[in-house]
Every structure is written in structure tokens, then in C-alpha cells.
Length: 312
Image (cartoon, rainbow, N blue to C red):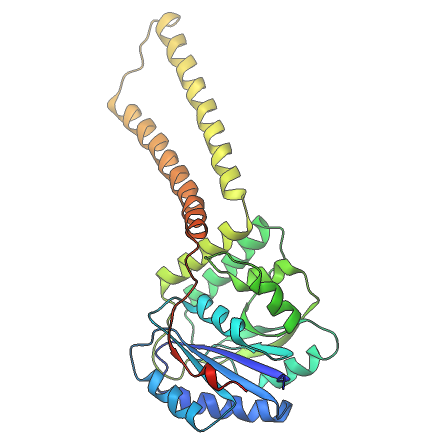
């Protein structure tokens, strides 16, 4: 029988959270429908997360786990859950309990009114530094400015989507995933549900600055070619400025009979042009890297073990 609701939960080093997370998810799922499934995706955790997941799934025939052979990343873990889920409606929620599982019920009810994508928008982000709040807000402002897709501000991957959205996502094979951008690009009818995000109860975030930066670059390069346009325009402007400097130097030498000298001016101009060149090469390199990843056609992830054979 096709479940009414699937809940996809990516987890990474969440050993302490699993028992409470499961109990809260189970309570919500049962309120919505007796026909449900909860799919945990263990993204190469190095603590006892997998042991806890096995205990949960051993006692609940509607709970499943997928465990990667290594850490492949949060977005890939969500994709794995979407590959195997079967529900008419699919909820995506992180496994750190910062997003309240109880909100799934409200999002599900809204999705029954013909809304294919119901996403959770944060009113407050408790326990996060001012830098993370400002940088996240700035990123979404930039990506909305530089792309043609409308990604809602202050949202993550916490949402309830229709199975038709899941099937469309399965047809998008790019390696560098940016799911909230992909879902927005699909253009399905969307609405928001507001909530206050809680502080992290246990452990530390799996998204340090380096991963946040990579995530931002993935989002920009996946949905915008404006960085490449910027490189072209920078090249044109630098060439134009260089031409003016050359003309001025020739004018000074032959007309004013005064040769431009100075170590400082030479070094400044060389470093300026060199900086522009390195920036341009770096931007182009990011796009080439993503092309290379897609061309290799390696699998998105490798499953080390699972209990999916128990799916009815």
C-alpha cells in the first residue's frame, strides 16, 4: 500500500538526538495517517548514530534507514531519501531538532489544499550568531538578484512536497545539489508556514563556514551565469583602462617629453590586473569543476547498508 506520508530525515552525528527525534516524528506521522513511513539517511556519521537508527527501525516496521559508505553531504542525503520514498506527500526535515517536527502536521494540512510545495519560513533563528544570520540573509538577497528563480528568504529544506515534485527532482541529475533552488525552479505552487527555529540541543552544527561557502557557490553556479558575465565585463573594463594608461604614457613620452617612472605605480597596476585575472580564472574554474563532476557520471552516493528490503 502506498503511504500517505513519507518523512525524509538526513542525520549526521546525531546520536543523542535520535530517540527524541523519532518519538516526535512518530507521534506527528500517526496523527496524519496510519499509512506512513520515516526514512532516516545516515550521512557517514562517526558516532553511534547508526546503532540508534537500527534500534529504532528494529521496533517499527514503518521506519527505515539508509547508511552511506562515507559522508557525502546533507543535500545528497536528502536526495537519497527522495529516491526511495513512496508517500503521496513527502516531508523533509533535518535531524537536529532545530526544526520542530510538530509543524509537519500544519504543512501537510495546507498541502491538501492543492499546494504542491509548503515550506517553513523562519521568524526567528534562536542560538545562531549574528554573522550566520547576516550572511544567510545576504546570500539569499544575492541569489535572488543574480538568478531568475524566486527562492524565499529565511527558508531551509524543511518542507512538505507532493510526490509529483519528488518525481521531477529525480529527473535532475546534477552532482552539485541545491535542492531549495531546484524546487523553486520547478515552479510548482508554493506557500509558507511561519515558525521560530529552536536552538540546537546537542552537539555542534554540521555546517561550518567552509561548507556554508561551498553551498553558496553551488547555489550561484547552478542557477546563474551572471558571474561569467561579470568576468567578461571586468575584462572589458580592465582592457579599456589599460588602453587609456597606454595612450597617456605615449602622450607623456612624445608630447610632454616626460616619461612615467616609479616602482609604486608599476606594482599597483600589476597587482590589480593580476588580481582580476585570478578572480576570473577562479570563477570560470568553478563552472568547469561542476561540468567535470556531471560528465564523470559517478553515482551521487554509495549505500553501505540499509533495511529497505523490509519495505512492504
